[in-house]
Image (cartoon, rainbow, N blue to C red; front, side, top):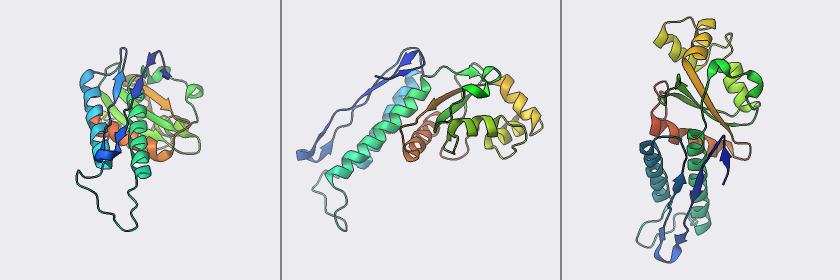
Length: 213
């Protein structure tokens, strides 16, 4: 069971009963002092829905084309969905730090996902991913928190909401009014990290995320 900061998050997945053409995906998530149980329940509902989409119909499935929907592909779909849920729920267990106290040196250069929250509150403001050459460092430090970079969607939303200038004013506003939690995912594919991001946005509905809700 991996340690996330000072918390632990774990997922247990039951197998499938191929003889009955059904797939059982049961996700048990254990947390200590992390996200609200309502949020976790909604994440479980998304995972169950993803499993259902990966399952064949109750009747004997008819092959499509060359019969791509094999048992191996079903297993891979389940693994992708469960890994994405693990990333999403693990991020929710990371204790956010006030943006002004986060130094550039501590942001990892691995690919991963992150969440901005309003101050020390649990209310989510923006969820994103860092998938570039320098991963989270590039996305958070050289884009969101660099005053000369003016294409950040998060920063544009802050400019509109707080009425500050788009460069130094927006960066200072982030450092004072927002907190940050991030999760490096060096062993995961960009696709899985992106699915985790979509799950988080769909579930949490952050104020400044306009797409994927």
